[in-house]
Image (tube, rainbow, N blue to C red; front, side, top):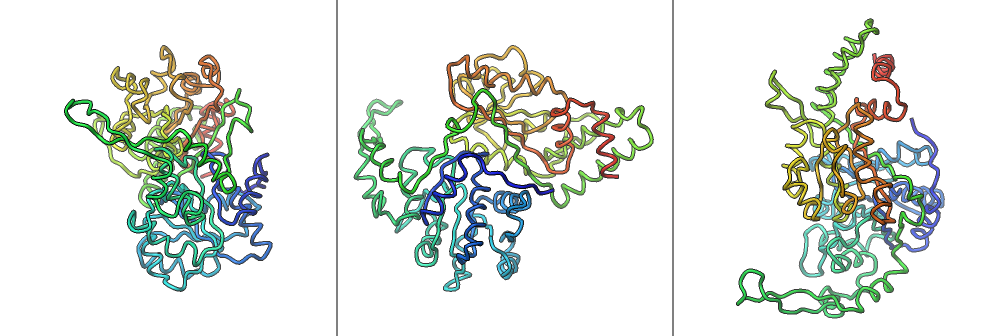
Length: 467
């Protein structure tokens, strides 16, 4: 059920910035309302009669799920029609023929196809580049094919352009030139990437760490570079810093929803129906049927054990893995403490994120504490007590998998939470992300944590809603 969107204190400033500057960037981390703020802009432009439509670019999950879900979430934006342009070429062609849509969403991978397919009939007056760091590789005469294709229409066909990202320069200031070109064609940072480099960067020879007779070339940022670049971008780039708007004594909690589809959803629903059928008419011993919630939680995560020995499993989807990938991108290299529950969860996560650390091992814990791992995977049952010092390296906790035990969750959070941050002398905000599979037992688990009600009560209430 949709509800009324209430802007946060900084949203008027964000929307005003986007309105006043037809080509601009908003730098704000995940969970700070970049999507809803941009929808407020588009709703205002629609009411003012400013012509559209709008093209939203993003990773596949963002284009397919996030923007359509955000419009459905809020009454304020229900009048905006969203059309994802994804799938096969024929499916994308059909989607583009929907001339009733206000917003078309597409993943960056299909940009060369889109520009070629539309040719001179490019209809999009507005472009929103979500996770705009994907534009960093643009170069006028080389660089990525996607950004090259996009550059052909960026100024000849598009009037309004917004870059959205929480991490504009994860690998240093050099990341800024490609993104900013789409805002001003190089007016601020240099017409070419070479001019940008020559103005603010130098090079020096350094001795190779292994071969003392060999030297390598290393980039050097001049002392004056950062202040000058920031001053040049100040008028068109707005930063939303959580420290300015939130009570840092409390964590900033964000829910990241994913949606099961096709065979993955069919398998989940089959297991859920079996669980509720067992519950019905047997309320006194209803908790015995809660054993089936284990399978439901496994399937919500994307895999389930098969056979009696729990030695093998089948994978059904990777939606949560892609959601975690987005969180890590927004974290801009900061380590993320991530909770899993089942052994196959850990195996799949380590395969998907080879730079991640298994915190149940000494080697993994040492890597995480040393800052050599972008994500650390821990089981709440083993991470709740006796693990200290993580707060010095981490201020982001993520629940990739969920479990009924509220104490385990709280103890996991406490390893790096606000109190620990304060003890470490830190004043940065602390974030908690819950990756949740929509319409699954994941939601029931979080409902239990929020209300402290019994598992049996939660299951019985859910049964009445779904049977």
